[in-house]
Image 1 (spheres, rainbow, N blue to C red):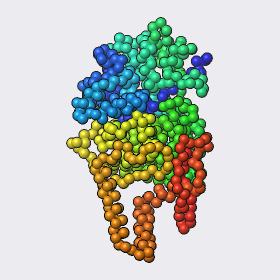
Image 2 (cartoon, rainbow, N blue to C red; image 1 turned 45 degrees about the horizontal axis):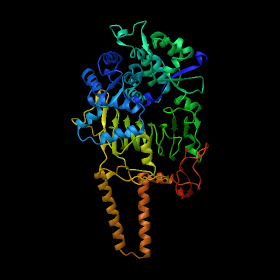
Image 3 (tube, one colour; image 1 turned 90 degrees about the vertical axis):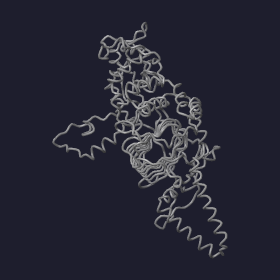
Image 4 (tube, helix red, strand yellow; image 1 turned 45 degrees about the vertical axis):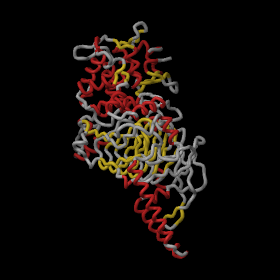
Length: 591
């Protein structure tokens, strides 16, 4: 085995799920994290595991962070690390029984995290740091050919930066900051008075194990993925990394040099998926605008946590999918417009970027749903976390155990209760450890550029609102699948259920009024035509006509992709569609 056949790369998930999509706070800089690294190793009860009480003490007492922000980081890290669905459901059960803040604190006090991995997690928040140079001019220095960016250009560029999916940015970040990352793992006795590592210092094997949060690798192309510490303690890398089996430690500078030489781009990242990922076939290739739609996946080769499906430029069409190929995958929905997307499988994470005028209905999302730079989006989901940034006129119907995170740059965001179901929904929820309680959909956390925004003393109605009960309408998932779920899990909040009941009573009263009129056959025909005309006018005014049209299949055909049968096939009724005086047939697109 040759040393150069070993590749090490940054893992995708810590950046994708763990890094908050906002510029980090100044108190999470390397200067303060070095102090924290020394403090936790010298203080009893902080190492090797850091409990919530001690992190709250450090964050609130030393770093001067608000408690809600301290919990946000702690909770995000806990969401990132691997818990079994059973453990998550047990935790949800414990939280649901808390009736006061003191009881909630008692439950939170039981949580602890790996201290060194948590330090690394806090450090990678710097990945979304916006430098003055980059925010003004991007990656190029100014020249006589480069115009000065206007204030609106600067704002747009700053707000549009989202590095959580950018594997090139992950590699660049790790390479640029590898020395600082390793310094956080060095024991205090081997640091200078300024907190920097001494030249001949050592890093223990246990400390290097924590690097597994950020790095993994393999020996040769196509071989099994391994944690980074295993690769560094075997074969030629053992010598290059300066590993001593006697002391179970690495020489810092040899380890740094070895990692710098071995670091490569993630072979399961977005770049590789776009270049060589498997293209997903559609049930029908639609002429015209749908030709530009692109969907690719790496789920056939990637290990758990690195599976991804990329969807781009779906335009004026319905896409429906429930499949093992989606299960546990990270989904990116990019630049879609006027589309209706149903992904009815248990998912790992979902990101929606630069989409507009779309409806997206998701199966349970284990970690996070992130909406970035979107307009007029309607999202219906059960998720571990919801985050919305730089978006406008979006409505999110959510069931989530954590407070929705509203990042800077939002306007006119509407939060509503989860109000849909499909037959296998509850089974899918159990498979990813999501329960119906607790449900914090209506308790958003506003995160500004300078920290948390206090909505109790300074509410910002331009940023968000809670959906008024009178504006709630039921949403029916228009596909047949197998399962036992026949109602919204956990039901609707009482005011919303009461509003729907009132609408149902109005419909029943109308039907009674029509029956009491005792219309003759001709009058019934005329009345029916009048109602249909008004209904179609409403469909056109609201945009629902397109949604219904896109559900009409061309023939009774199986919605399968080219690689084999699906676990469950969405089905719709065969009807006709009129446009420009001609009957057309069009189906949901199945990937």
